[in-house]
Length: 220
Image 1 (tube, rainbow, N blue to C red):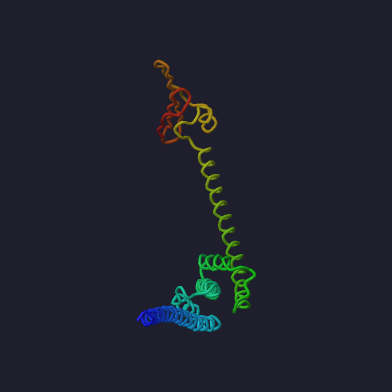
Image 2 (image 1 turned 135 degrees about the vertical axis):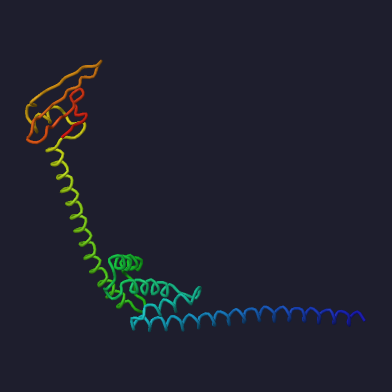
C-alpha cells in the first residue's frame, strides 16, 4: 500500500510538471506567434510606404506609416518625417512657410541616414535646402525694405516737425521758422511768463502763445 501511494504521488507530480511545462510552452509559442504577426504587419506597411514614397505619394505614405502605430521601426519614423517634409514642400510650390517647415523636418533626419531611401532623401534634402536659402534671401530683403521704409518715415516726420511749430517747441525754433514777431505781448503771473507772438500775414495773422519759453498754443 505504501509503495502504491508513493507511485500515485510521483505520477501526480509528473502530471503537474507536465501541465506547467505545457502552459509555459504554450505561452512562449503564443508570444512568438504574436511577435511574428507584428513583424509581418511592419514589413507589409514599411514596404508599401517605401513604394508610395518612390512614387511621390506623400499622403499615402504618411497614412500607411501612421497606421503602423507601435509597429514602426526607426527607419519608419525617418520615412514618416521625410514624407511629412515633402508633403509640405509641395514639389517646390509651397509657400515660404511650407518650405521652412520642410527644411526643419529634414533637419530632424541625420545627414548620415542610410536607410531604404537614402538617395531619395539626400536628393530631396538638397532641393529643399536650395529653396530654403531663397526664402531666407527674400525674408532678408523684405526686412531691409521694411527698415528702410521705417527710416524714411521717421526722416519725413522729423523734417515735418523741424519745419512746423508744435506744442512744447522752443521760442528759439519759433523765431528760426517765423523770424522776429511783428508784435510781442508779455505777462508774468507768479513763476509763469506768458508771451504772445503776433505775425502779420496777408489775409490772416499768426498768433503763438509761449509759457516759460515753450509753445503753449497758437492761432492762425
